[in-house]
Length: 217
Image 1: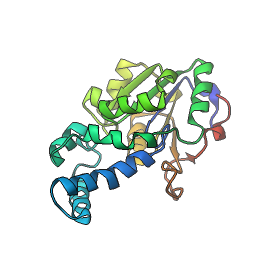
Image 2 (image 1 turned 90 degrees about the vertical axis):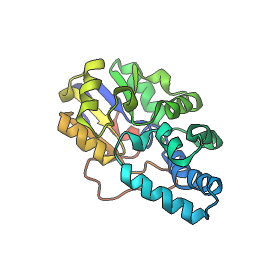
Image 3 (image 1 turned 120 degrees about the vertical axis):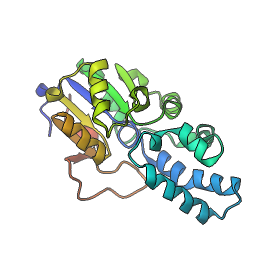
Image 4 (image 1 turned 45 degrees about the horizontal axis):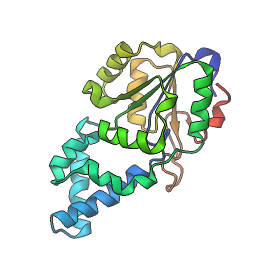
C-alpha cells in the first residue's frame, strides 16, 4: 500500500486514528446531551435534539472542536465532564505498535489533531502516547481547523515537511480532502474509527483498519 522509501514524514490524527473514537462518540452523543438535559430540566431526547442542531451549525469549524466554546453553549464545564468517561480512552487497534516502529525508523512523526488542548492533555495523560511524536499539534494552537488550508501552512512553517514525501492518516474525509488540496501525496483513512460501530463502507480515500497492513516502516 505504501512504499516507505518515499516517506520522510508521517502525520497522524488522534481521535479515530491513533485512539478509539468510541470515547468521543459516547461523550458527545450520549453523556453530554444527558448532562445538558439534566442541567436545563429537559427530557433526554429534547437535550439530544437541541445539541444536535447546534453541532450541525458549527461542524467543521474550530468552534466545533472547542470545549471552551461548548462550555459556554451548554452552561457548564465540558472539559471537566469528560473525566467521567476517561476510562474509555484507549488506543485503536495496533496503533502503539505502529508508533513504536515509526519511532525506530527515524522518520519525522507528527500528531495533528483538531482536539482542543484540554481534551488533548486528558488523552495524553490517560493513553501515554506523547512519547512517540516529535511534535504534537492542536489546530487550536494555530487558530484554524485542519479543514482549513491555513492550518497546513502553519504546520509546515512550524515543523517543516515535504508534502510530496509525507503520509497523512485521518478518519475524517473532509480533513483528508484539505490535506490533498495542500499537496500531501499519501493519504489514508480508517475503516473502523469507533470499535463499537461497524466498519465504514464506500470511502473516497484508500482505507485500512490495522496499521500492520502498511508493512514495516
